[in-house]
Every structure is written in structure tokens, then in C-alpha cells.
Image 1: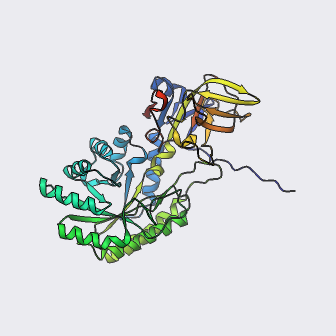
Image 2 (image 1 turned 120 degrees about the vertical axis):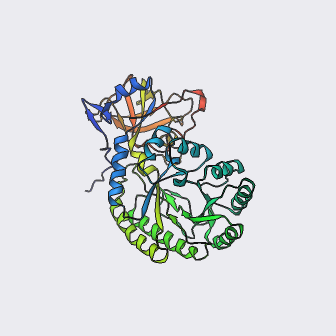
Image 3 (image 1 turned 30 degrees about the horizontal axis):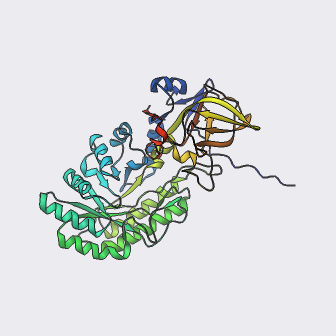
Length: 412
């Protein structure tokens, strides 16, 4: 007779505990709640981010820049923290551009990507002097006109929609028909248009997919991306200075997932730098990472209001929910919903004793933070913590849904 073992979450060993209470950068959750003034709140541990950056810096070869993709978490204090620790900041809106500039990031180190940039947003970016990752002929023509009108030179890179897909990615952003970037086969004509308009061409950007935990898949994606960009470079008006290969590095959210082994990915990048510089002397490669840098550093903490039995099942009703952390709830009703790693933050030394569901205060059955999970016995006043919450949490949630207050965010 054989037995199967239920998959477990990857250990949340980026945090420690003392006296049974979770610590975020050495501060107990109960004290963080007092500092926040109320629950729920998000707390981001700067020491965890610092370690992740240090590990990557120790593995990345010379010639590879490390950029922060601000869309993962645009909290202003975090942007200020990252500003001096990365080589570039990649923004996806005029609002994020303002945060990056306020954080002290030099315009020369900011790039702006995203489909459907408005004329106002393009004008703001042009005035600031940042690199614009153009995603259509319309953007190129608008930039040329605005540059002529204002006398401000446009800095342009072309975002390429590759002719392949990253199949192991949790979210595919390139290959096939996509709203992102310019289809690879249309890029040569756009490059000729950039040359004819006299715009300042600086490089290429490609982002095949995100949330990938497979090192071999990432290595293959980077190799194929570089091969594509080197081929396109032959049609460029001048030699590109920067080839942004995107990111895609994932973190483990669900049972059975393991942390990405980044060492072989970074080792393979050394060979890609050599290959790129044989054809383009002095060119720099860039990795654009968001979730991988900050996702594991964040926790979402809410307080249990009531322990509510219902027909043989226990619900822990908390003061936080899907309006604050949409991804943990299942994004408005995914067909297959899986739990983020969750714990009772003030009972970290107590083993699981019962299967319960953690729900929020919203009047919808979708307000479910954890479903039938094994937790220590808990009740009113105890803290629920959801790990892996440093990316796409606060800013990616419907904060105004049903009119509840927004959670506090803290960088500690």
C-alpha cells in the first residue's frame, strides 16, 4: 500500500519568531500593529529585500544591470529604499514615474513601458528625460511631434513582442497576439521610421513572461530573447546601448512550489554578455525584476474579530480581506483557488490543530483569505498573517470595494 503526501508550502524562513510571535525585521507583529495604529496593515522587511539584492549582486556577471520594476510595489518609501540599490527603475505609468523621480532616481536610469501611453504621459516622460520603451508606431509618431514642438530630445527603446512564448511562465506577456510591444516582424520597419524621424534610439526591451520558477526555462527565454534582439539590431539606426531582457523570476506562493534556483540563470547570463558584446561592443544587458526582489519581504496582517462555527466548520472572521489582498483571495473567483502561506502570527510556536477558513468583513462569498487550512486554535484578537505579500498586494487590490478603510503600509 502506498500513501501520498499532501504538498506543503515552501518554508517562510525569511522571517523569524520569538516567544511564539512573528518578527518582521526583529519587531513583533503585536508591536507593529501598535505602530500602525490599527489592523489590517502591510509590513515590508527591508532586511529581507537587502539580502535578496545582495544575493543577486553576488551572482550576476559584470555587464548585467539590475532594475526594479516598480509595478510590483510602488510604495514611495520602498521606492526611495530601492533607488540607491538598483541600477535602474522601470515604471509603467506617469504616476509611477513621479514616484521614481521623487525618490531621487536620475532620469537617465528610468525607463517607461506599457501599452496605451497617453499623449500627456508621453509629454511628461519627454520633459523628464527618461527612456521610453515604445510599443507602437503611434507612440513613435507622437514622440517625434512632441519633441519637435518642445525641443526636448526623445530617448527611445523599442519593446519587442517576441515570436516565441515562455511556456513555463505563470503569466505570458510575449509571443502570439499580444497588446504589449511591437511584433518582432514589424520592428525593422519601425526602426527605419525612428531613424527617419531623427529620434534618439538607445536599445530594446523584451518581456516574455513573469512568475517563472523553472531555471532552465528562464535560461532558454533569455538566450532566445538575446538572439532575437541581436538579429533586430542590424536594422537599428545606431548600435543599441541597452538590451533589457525583462525578468520573469518567480517566488513560491502555493503548495508544492519551490524557490527558484537563480545561480544557473545568473551563470548563463555571463555567456550572453560575451555573445552580445562580440557583435555590440560595450552593450549592457538588464534584468527587470519586481516580484522577485520584494515579494517575499512583505506580509499582510489582519486581526480576528470573531471565531464563528457553522455546521461543523470554523470560520475566523477577520478585519481584512479581498479588498486589501485580492491575489490571496483568488482574484474575484478563480476556478481553481489555492491558498497563500498563512499563519497565526502570535502562535508561531503552536502546531496546527484544526482546519479553518479565514474570511474578511465583506458581504460576498469571494472574501476568502484562506480556505480549509490547518492552523493553531485561534480566536478574537489573534493575528492572521499572509506571507508572500510584498508584491501585487496593496496597489493591485480593489481598495474602495464596499467602502472599508485602506490598510496601512510600513517599511520596517
